[in-house]
Image (cartoon, rainbow, N blue to C red; front, top):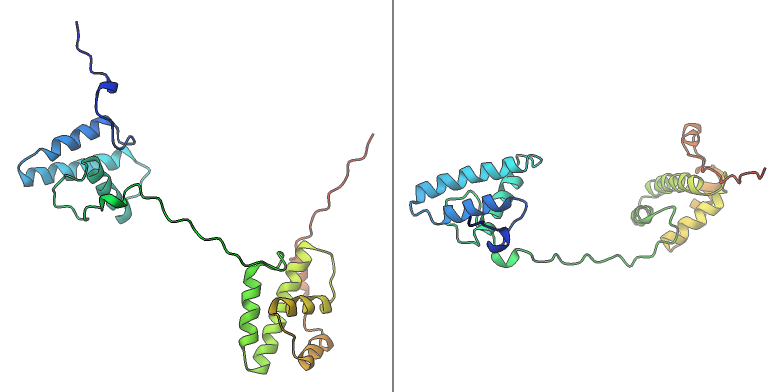
Length: 207
């Protein structure tokens, strides 16, 4: 009667993506006494591991990962002259720290958080002309975003009110009057053409 070697009777494969044969080779290399020969076998095995995963790019990060995997499969007992240090055993399988979600509430979602940050920078500007130019630029941007997601037209007064709300301060009265009087927030024709028109949900007529 044949003695069949079942996988269920063998030790578990540490990294299943490489298979049991690679695991056996790693176990064999660990037991090689001659260091020079052990190094040669380890480097040949790294190349074999790379060929098993052809989609991996030949980069420094990829090589580092392959050596880390080799050390993991050896249960951190492989002693070779590797180009990368052995990873810390405690770091393997360690869950990453959860990312903290921002608690910042956006007043107008169609403008986004970046617009608010730009407005903060504009109000930090001390030079009057630079400040006015910043208001014109951000006002036109807000107008474009507003028209993208809302109605076909909007009064400059509404955009300025939104700007003041986002800035949490009032625009200088003289500068505000100048913005309105000069129609500074009017969009050039080329910009108007580039504004996508939201598609209306047409109701199907019943036959």
